[in-house]
Image (tube, rainbow, N blue to C red; front, side):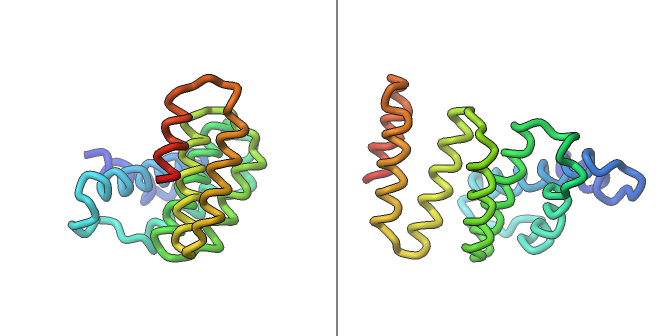
Length: 158
């Protein structure tokens, strides 16, 4: 079981920080997948507070040179999602702000950031802000001729 394997890596005190960060991020991904599959109806094996503590290692400055941009982006997005689920909206917003500075141009990653940002806005009942996020995203990607991106914008507006 991948969750047990990642937990054993985390519990191993002699593992290097980069491996620890990857294992922590894998647990966060497993948690999110579990929530999606179960529809939030079943309690996950790992609670959010424990997961947030484990994800702290993914934001260490000492890892800056060891991780590639894709890993940094994935770690940041997972931290934001965990904070969002915990109701720590400002912490989630700070994580998303850091992601924008990474200048990561992966379309799927940009869509995930957009959807997380929209969730943050809607959690504060800021519909206008959510619409503005969609409009800005659409302007940034209007020249891409990517029908999937435009479909996401239409769906996000609904």
